[in-house]
Image (cartoon, rainbow, N blue to C red; front, top):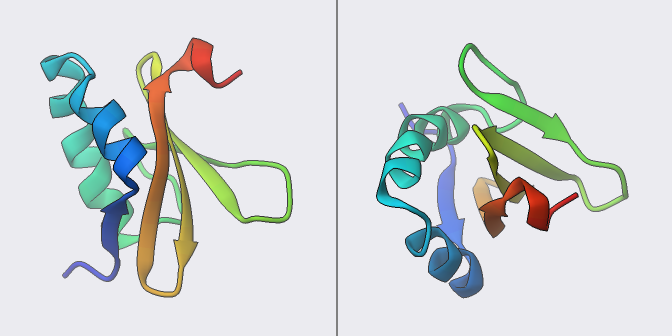
Length: 87
């Protein structure tokens, strides 16, 4: 059962589609788990709450990051890219 809908902003979708194909494929199971519970990290999924008052979180897959926030029953992905672009 999927409890949350995953939505990408247009920018995040564009950035995701520009990632190497093998990285996109590695994100798929992590996104499925995120749809089940975006607040808790599980085996193989590295989720971390970020500082600030927006409730933003990041999902790490290898050297790549996906930033998102949860709004009601929607996980809104707003940034995707290599680690160097985030920190």
